[in-house]
Image (cartoon, rainbow, N blue to C red; front, side):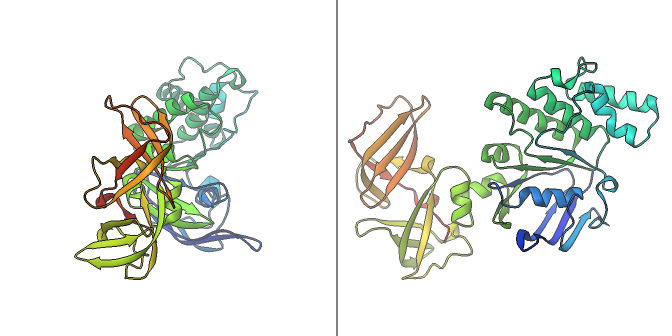
Length: 358
């Protein structure tokens, strides 16, 4: 296995920016995800690591080796494409063996490796079947086996689950994570799906407009977003704008409306925030952190009228009109009566869950 380092890597397509100044280090054996919307630069970055694109600036290193100008076949990476890129006229075993045959390995070694990898991806009884006779999930596992059979230093996956239905996507996601943990292989995964990124990754790089927005563990990305884009792209959140009234003893008081002032901790502020009296800033508040209050006493109490209530069994999701703004909240059911549209409600926002994102 190998670590992967990108040092100030940029890629342009004519006058159009692909990615700019990507600077990351991926540890050996890490599951690292590039996450972002379509056109953000995540696949371009992955293709530079694979060797399909060469950067205009910067260096790419696998361990201590500079691979910036090496062609794909000299990088020892295995890649799973979004459309799988399988050969429909070949059997499962023939598809898996293809990369080994190109490398001109002895036939007995090819057979041993193919048999072993088929067992690993749970396709050991499908070797003689044509890939066009397989389900989408089975084809995905064939593509994964073909990438792994060459024993690459690094596994690259470009939106590998996007063609599967929701249930199969969940099952295959668990299968990929199981294989990665079992093999301990350095894995770089590209997706626009936040749930995939959050559930599978050791760390995530969030991208937008060809630039890195934030790098961190899933819980850091979710609970401590560095800016408005990350806060809104990862899961659901409430973004409220206000003006700082005061910063005293580690507590920031932010006036949202003439009637509503929220307090939060200075330590929960993005480095980009200007937390000084009179400065405008934005806070991110996750729906699940908002609680129903028994009375209006205390700080961070918001009074409103329920606009929408959705009971899902384990929880109820509310949209509450608080005058100049609305709040989304998610409350665990615990046998409580579901409030209905038009009812008034008091909401409490704990100050430790108020994050200043600038």
